[in-house]
Image (tube, one colour):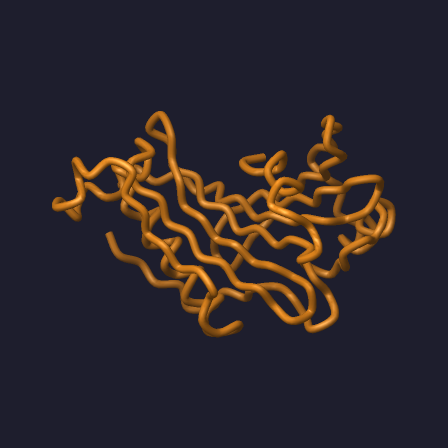
Amino acid sequence: MIFSILAIEIPMSVTAQFRDAKWGWPKGVVRQSEKGVHPLEQVKTGYGDVLIYKGKLGLYDVSYLYGFRNDSLFIGEYILEEHYINENNYISAYDDIKERLYTKYGNPILDDIVWKHTLYQDIKKNWGMAVSLGHLYYHALWELEHRTNIEIKLQGQNGICQLIISYTDGKNTLSNKQPYEGL
C-alpha cells in the first residue's frame, strides 16, 4: 500500500531547536513551551530525565520526548506510533518524512540503506519484514548550522519496526545520545 501525505510540517523555526524549545533550556521552561499540555510520562534514568508526550507529526501519530542532562535539554525525538500490518508502510513513512526533511534542509550528510543480512535483499516486497527482523536499516543525518543535528532512522528487531526522528544538540557526542535511543 502506497500512501501520500499532503501536509506534514517538520517543526523547527530558525531559533527553536526542537519544537518550540532551545538546547540548554531547563525542564520547567520546556514544559511551559508545550503550552498547557502535560507530559504523559516523566522518566528518570541514570543518564538524565525524559519528558514523554503524545501528539502528531503531520498525519502520523507519534510519541515525542525531551531528554535532559543536568536539567539541560540536549535531545528531542519523535517516535512513530503507527502500527502497520504491512511492514513496507514503515519504509513509505520513512521515505515521506525523509523527503520533507530534504525539502526543508537540503541534502543530508549521510543517507544509508544498510543490509546486515541479505536474505530478502532481492525480494523488495519483503523489505519491510527485513527491517522488522533487523536485516535492513535506513538512516539519514543532517547537521544544521544553528547547532542542531537531525537524524532519521528506521530499524527493527524481533519482528517490530521502529521509526525515530532525533534532534540533538550538535555539541553532544554520539556517546551522549546513545542512552536515549529507542525510548
